[in-house]
Image (cartoon, rainbow over the protein chains, first blue to last red):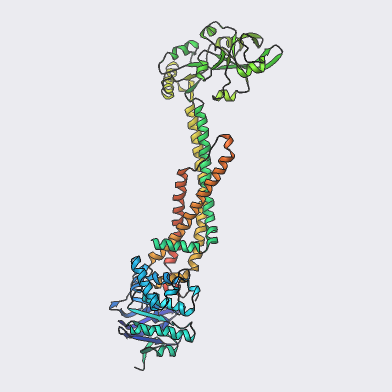
Length: 223
Length: 396
């Protein structure tokens, strides 16, 4: 499913080279629910960017679903993100001018899915997060938890190989956090592959497997 | 594409006031272009119509060097026999002091031949025009206009009365209708005018002799002025040793040509100035599009993260700029139409009407489209090239 081998990513800070990732290795099987935990500055974001195909590694190999992700052009990476990855961000990242259903529909538009099928899949995805009744609302008219549920609907509507969540509960109170985590559990039970990046131990512990990132290196926790 | 169009509309309508201010440059530019060009062409149309209604089958010949072969009345008679030439009449005028009982006025006196009236499209109201016999016998008869009769004699039906021109007695044998259709008629509306035989005028005026230096020629009833012009030119060249500088031949077509070249230049000039204001409007569009790209950096990041390629983003912003321009253009065209209607109503009494020139509307639309693309390309490209990670973390 996900296979990272000796992945390095180097940033040039002034005259110094900083290794955000230093020969990191990670293997995730289909259907796994993995959380990656680490303090800020540990290379967490860089790892998430590389797994999410928002960035490519300087060295090492990354196989996503058997496909090597290399020095693809920006457009090819966009295509891979569109088809294989569903993103859930800390700050929801919904487009404020679009209604809930339009936000969910967007990745399907980029996939050039026909209109009728789009409508059907959007409806299903919103039903999955129990938000059919809020379909016509703008993000500003929704609570944080509801916005995050719209974001999850947007992530799953493309039936991605991987759901990549970056601090999905970071902006939510504890009650809503439970709601959102419940959805992730349900998705996991429906045999979706989930990678959850967080700095919160309580959240991380809910995954079936925890990986700790520190100084650009990955280590299994409790494995 | 339809989706992208909807998104563009949404984004524009999301900030109506700003969109309107941005479009204002385009609106004003389009209005300037459409109104100015429509006004010029409307005015040109009216003037040209007026000129051609003044009888464009008239040629005027002026001889500057007769090369020892002076043109006389007999020469004109010979030329009139040519099937391609209609009528020919000398043009000679002088001014004289006209007197009738106690009334004294300055009168413009035309030395005429029978052909004069039909060439100039004038007709007799009462009595008769001058005849060939009058010309041959240098008779002391005159034909005056209705206006002259009223002002000098006091009434129109004054046939047989005598007026004196520079002390010579002339019997009035005809009254001409007031002429408000031909150019000469309009220009001389308020003048006192008398027509006397050309030969009689030779005796009255020291500057008029049997040598004719200026005359008018008309096309035959079934001919056209172009062939007459060619025939006249041939005859004149034959007579004056092929010297084109010995005479000048003026037709009203030439007047129209000169007129249209002047208005052509005017149209291009005004159109050019308006085009500059459109370009300035385009810079306004580019400016606001750049602001929009910065404002929406995060949105661009989100779209890229969920799978929008460069092309999609480029298309979205380019479309937005084009739509902005085209809406501005439509508003501009509509307002131009309103303004032109208002002007038409205001000048209705002058008999000039101004309508939208569809040609210039088409140019304005094409120009706006080009401006939308050209000035939208840079901001759109800037948006498309934003790296997704940076865009995603922008401002948050």
